[in-house]
Length: 333
Ligand code: AQP
Image (spheres, helix red, strand yellow):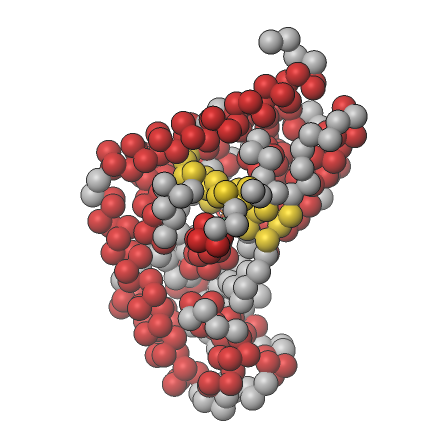
């Protein structure tokens, strides 16, 4: 059966963007039954920018709690922390030698994150997408649920798999497909509808965190930027209104309906009336998850046990694929 892989960085609190764009979709694919699902906290990716060691440990456990609270069942899915399966880094090195400098330089995430000071960015940040290719291909995964922002990295993964297969004259790595679906593939900042909602935005008012309490969620939604117009009668009426579109998309994704259905329900209403409904919905969907997260965080040993067991299961899949890769490349056993 086809295998799904995806990951999230333990680089800070989970945002609504991570939840709707990634985690909620991971749960759908786990429950769909048609896939074997492998999900990972990618701590090796997180350290491509500075992480305080104590924070990294805490964030990794909290992310694990988030996965479970959101509905990932560690019996049904393989759930683990990247550095506990060393085959990711080992295959990552091989892919560093397959990927081309020119490909990496074109990555918009590299350009955004390294910014003008790229001489001072870590080499790991530059190589990030080659390690991501290894994360996916070490499991021969064929389906990768991600948000819109990861589309270019997925293209690069496909290029790496293709080049490896061509260079060595094998048909070894599958060419994985991105799965970018639903109403919230790109959740935008609450302060600027043209910017991605992000954990690293300096303004906490720009995002909904999975750990925000009901008051914080309601306050941030109330203060979210909108224009002065009412909700339109048609979807096309959202064109050129990025903040309005974002709130409609968030409502749709949280309530598992289409943006069209949201418009049908709220056409003509003012944002002053819509926002409290969105806040109620957000609280009803997110409060149980954050409650369960804080409960799980009381039991760090249990989290560590789950991760150790997940890593064992991950290694059982990854180790033979690494060995075969080494054989193909010509490394002595
Ligand atoms: N705003 C978003 N809308 C939809 N999906 C999103 N994802 C992230 N932000 C949004 C998806 O979440 C998954 C994990 O992403 P990550 O761990 O790489 O997180 P990130 O992209 O680093 O998250 P941030 O919040 O943007 O952190 P910074 O600011 O540090 O870069 C991916 O599938 C991603 O698409």
